[in-house]
Length: 203
Image (cartoon, rainbow, N blue to C red; front, side, top):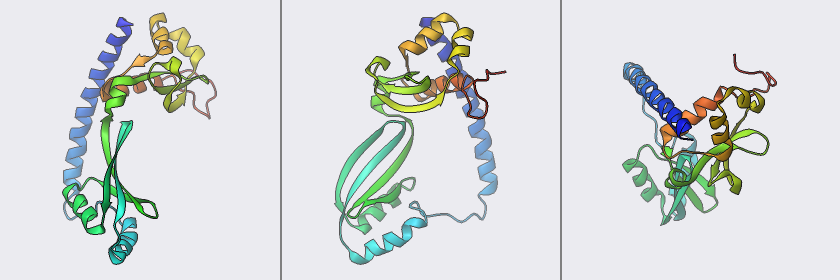
């Protein structure tokens, strides 16, 4: 298990280095393309029609603030707010978006490129009963799947991985930050079975 954790840490540093290089390149491209580009409202154009109707009827609605993480979600009730108050929230937090969630409910959505605190404390990667790489809340034997990713070629995986790595996957690989999360996904995506490939092993 210790050797496997060391392997994940090495992959984590490699992915972080790639991410920094990629972010710099993306920033340069973005700066080059921003000149003269019109800006968009945080809520997006599709929201304008029902936002206008909300302004007109002047009725407060129940507003939920949802933090959507790469793994996990947290929700806070903001209470009854009117359209003006929600628009002020969006002005103060331009990266947030909004959407109706029912006749009298609005969701204010914040996307966060990180793991939630619950995931940081209790997330494990392992195999589900069908051989998919899955993320579990708590040890895999508790069978609380948060998310399923892709089918793994388990026969090839078992024969090609060192025994302790295969055992670690079956027992559950603990991840506590987004770099470890991405590292595990990147590592095992090489052993994914694609629908159009059958059980082909990586070349």
